Image (tube, rainbow, N blue to C red; front, side, top):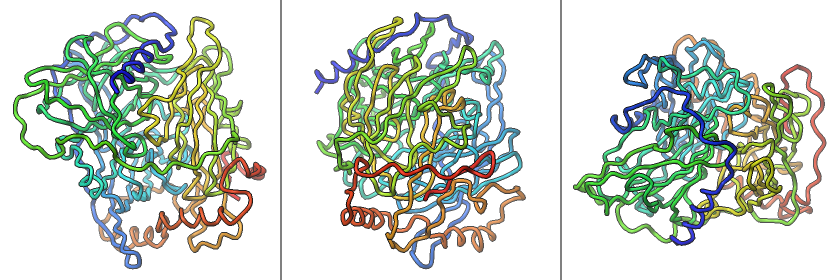
Length: 595
């Protein structure tokens, strides 16, 4: 295994460079590994309700979007940040699988917001549609299913045109679905040995404040790395196995992580056990880990052979990211001498889960080209030459509910693009280097990395000269959903589009046929006048329970499979004709409803 992963580590070191190392823009930090890693607090519910009909429990939470001050450079002034509950990262949600939740986000800041629970198959009105904004002084209740397999999700801003500004300023947090039965079976590290790590990259000005990047049209790579909001922290660990939930929440920076004992010696092995969509099929040993924006990887690191030593997590140059003087170090692990618990410290199981892979078919159903147009500095980033503000044309695909489709994602415009498809988990079928070397750039990677091959995903890194083929079943819900580049600068400047998962004729399955429109007026933001627990118990949570929005998902998926199995064409997108687009909308900011 090490020999294979070493080849991938070597290959990643040869990924295309687009510039020399640039001078640092931020002030020198000068306090590397002096301060401990912060651990975001766990969010607790205000109240709960149990659906009398189904027995499903719904927890209610309230989160307030607030401005706050924080000194990030010890020798400089305070930075102004905007975070969930006035902290960055926001509080961590740890939700037991099967317990639904309603999260009320209250906007107490001066910019609009929208919230996307990234990795959740939420119904369309609760998915964080970019135009479904919460204006200052308003709140919106988001209703989440939490019925997927255990996984690391995250919640972040998704407001039209200012997602980069809001996330860069601090609006991001962890949301973890836990499956106690599976955790007990696999016996991986839990509790204090299961630690979320949010990686970010910023520029700072001479005063220690985060720089204003509102005019940026290409990328904001950043030259100063932070973990859980702390620049270059350290973490005390015991000499045993730990499980780390890696999240890249940077605006534009792709990381390529390696673990070393001393400065650039190594690398040491890490073991990938989870991805965007939950556990991998088996633990994958690797010496380097490429993580594009919005990707999540769950990683086991075994410190048992490093008592009284210091290990460093580093990031090397990858893809089209610009590098800066002094970058490289990310996080230091200080290994102690004593182990206080043996829970989750045994050998890793050779198998974790059976992946529910979509059935493949030969034909490509859709090709997406991610390109740049315009003249500097006024670049625009498009998908198949369409931008999200083109409201009459931005719904680019209609997919009958339950259909499997194979898409090609083609990277271009001189940039890499991490592509996120809402609603679904997908399989990365292939990655192919295309286009010859030109303008000093190299071809992209020519293969799926072992940890990608063992996973289902909702984000795929697509290099500037790469084609990535992904396969997904468009289920369980009908509705209108977004897909986009997760370089937030590109997303804000048009590289976002929509697809309809359309209703099935004569399906007859007994469920609510609403919840298709992400701009449904019933669920739009409202003026905030406080939160009364009695009202939540007596009115708000019973109303959401009566929607029966998420039902028995396993039964829904079985019914969808049976529906398609009894009809011709079969359950593949290659056999379905492309449906006509919806009729022209009546307003300037429409949201088409699936047919």
